[in-house]
Image (cartoon, rainbow, N blue to C red; front, side, top):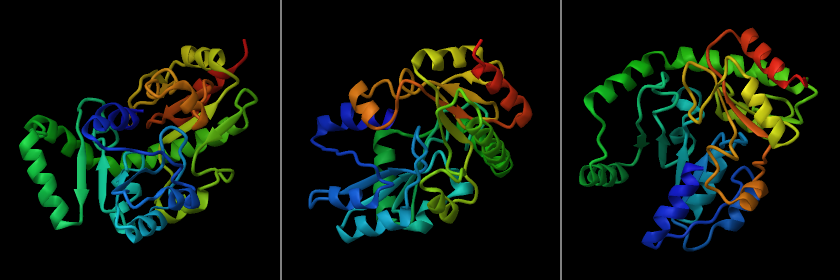
Length: 281
C-alpha cells in the first residue's frame, strides 16, 4: 500500500515510470523487463498475500539486463533472510516493525554491498536530512538485542496459528509460506531460516471480516506489524486503501482478507481468540 502510494502518487511527478508484476512468477518478471528498466523492487514475503520471490533467480534476470535489484526485507527481517547474499543490490527495512519490535519508534534502514551505491546513498541522506534522532537509534539498537528471540517465537506462533486457521470452517483460504499448500513453500524453505510472523486469511466477505475484527480481544486492530503484541487489520480498508479497488482485487486483495501480525503471546490464547471471533453467533 505505502510503496504503491510512493511510486504512483509521488515519484511519478519526477518523470519516473513504474509497472507492477507478480515477482513470484519468474516468466512474468522476464517479460516485464525492458531496455528502460533500471531497477526491480521486490517484497518477499509480499504484503499482504505473503507470496515468496526467488530473489536469486530474479536478481539474475535483472542483472542480465543491467538493472539493479532492491528487496524490501521488512517481513522476513535480517534474521530470517539475507537478500544481499542472494544477489540483491540493495535491501531496505521499515525498522519501525520487527527491528524496533516494541511499537515505540519510527525508522527505516537501507543497506548495500556496493561502495558506489553506498556513496550515493550517504550523499543523498546528507542532502535531504534523513537522519534519525539519537534516542530513536537507541530504541532500534535495543530492539536488535532481542530480534532473534522475538522472531523465532513469532514464527513458531504463526505456523501453529496458520495451521489452526486452515481447519476453521469460517476461513476460505490461509496465506502463510510455511504451509504445505503454499505455492512458494519450496523457495521459502531454501532462502529463509523460518517462515515469519505474518499470516493472512480470507473470510466470506467484508461484513464477515469486520465482525471478526470487532470480536477479537487479544489481537489489537492496527496497521503496523512486527512488534511483540499481536495485531490484526483489514488491508482493503486500511493498509491498501490507497490502491484503486479494481486494481487491488486483481492483485488478490479482496474485501474478505484479514492480515495478522502474530506476536509473542501464548499461542493457545491467540488461537482461542481467533476461533471465538470466527464463531458464527
